[in-house]
Image 1: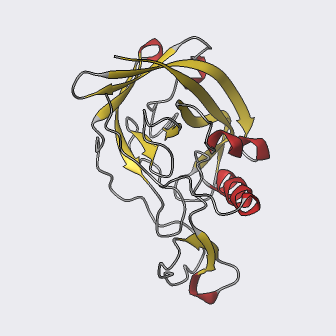
Image 2 (image 1 turned 90 degrees about the horizontal axis):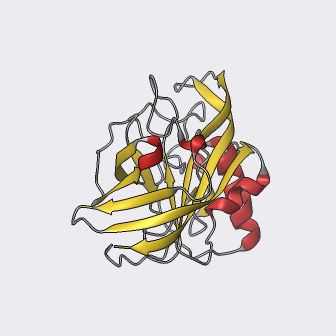
Length: 229
């Protein structure tokens, strides 16, 4: 069974501010991830054009000249003691913990085969919404290339190193536009033990940032815990 890692990830400080944060970050970040409302707004370098959010009391870094994210940084593979396994689409992937970068945006894996679990969501098996993300393409096909093939009733497993598993059944398969304000709701507490998997979907188009491309939609998969063995 998963360790009962506890967290204060869901200490939301105000519904209106939460929804603004979720909506903004969902539109800005490549795979549509969000942050947490335990952060607060601040101006980077006292520049009103660079509105960010930080932990209360955390120093605010100097302004970035063009407001862009820094180049990709190396990531550690497999920092969590479990893997994400989806037999139907051939996924058996290491999972690493990701949070926010120095620009207060959610980090994304710079590895085609790595799945991100976000530490602003619930730890798997702790009774709430555990949020994961991975790429569809990253210099070729990536870990969630076939995520959109999942259907209700399919199984998702969190497979621990000790051989124990959490088994989730897919309950919802959703494709939303990247700017759809309802998309943020999938990152919120669900009131039950679920996993939410997110990747890109729809049509690919080129961008002028260092990543070079994005997608018109986000593919969202929700699964509910049905067994622990």
